[in-house]
Image 1 (tube, rainbow, N blue to C red):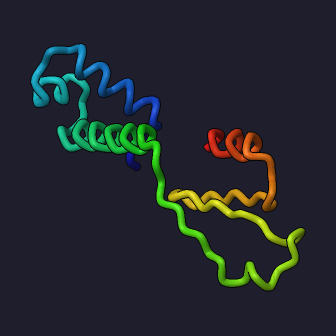
Image 2 (image 1 turned 90 degrees about the vertical axis):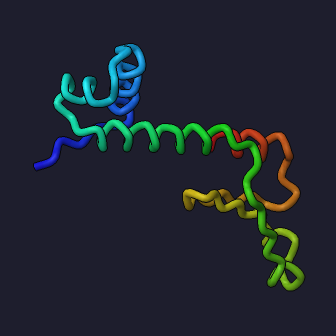
Length: 104
């Protein structure tokens, strides 16, 4: 069975590599891992960093049924790239929306 590493273990692995001053081959031999594993974690962590540092996300407004709904039934739904959905009633205080958005 494969030994799967957590995100924290992947970060620790990359940090050890960077501090070691060794070549990829030498470091991997010392850690008993394949170079593929090291490259995998470096790529995955770089992707996560770039996702976290992105301040703008695509927004799509769907107004298909909004004209037929009563005001109290209307809501704004934000769908994040990871699938998380945030639905708030129209007219909601912008400070509340801002707080909810920064949670994700």
